[in-house]
Amino acid sequence: MRHVISALVINEPGVLANVAGMFAARGFNIDSLVVGRTENPELSRMTVVVDADDNTLEQVRKQLAKLVPVVKVRDFAGTAYIERDMALITVGVGPEKRSEVIEIVNLFRGRIVDVAKQSVVVELAGTEDKIEALIELLGPYGIKELARTGVIAMSRGTQMAKEAKDESSDKPKQRKRSLNAGPGVALPPS
Image (cartoon, rainbow, N blue to C red; front, side):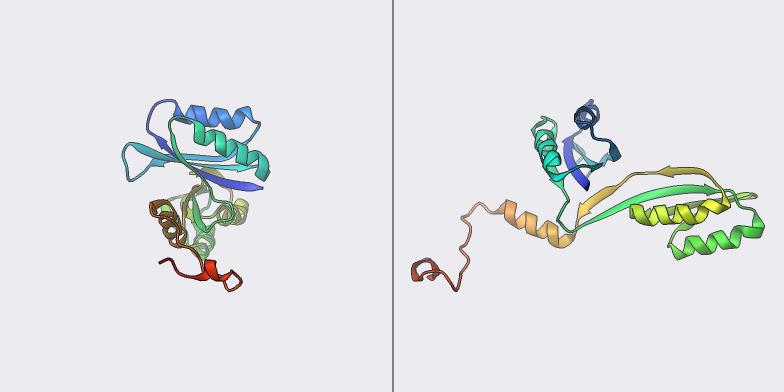
């Protein structure tokens, strides 16, 4: 199963090597690994995409959380999240076929960011599937060069609000009223 894991890490040398080494030691092939700055200059966010079964990945996630420079680990499986990948694609196409390529790119809501006599450079951001579909359609025109950023991911707004509510509560959890509960449980606290 495909898993997208996000780890908030302290900015210090060697963190990337430690995390990548931990995945490699367990025989995982990392499909995508992206590290970038966050709103806090002392922290970076690592987004790792791996293919693994749930049980094995749960062990890796726990071990990742135990690493000293790791502040927080999140597996997005089963939650509402947004993911994006970006690609720059150089397509070898002359003026006679350029309009066809531009039309395909526009259908995918991509952009032409450079034009030369015999090529165009396309920029596209979206899911991995969207980028793969565009690459497949542009293939017959001749892809000269391809660069991708890798997957980045964040929780959707409703998911973030739910997590913040769960984490910020120092007071005892409020009981939920149940129609099937006995009378003592169903009464409000006095």
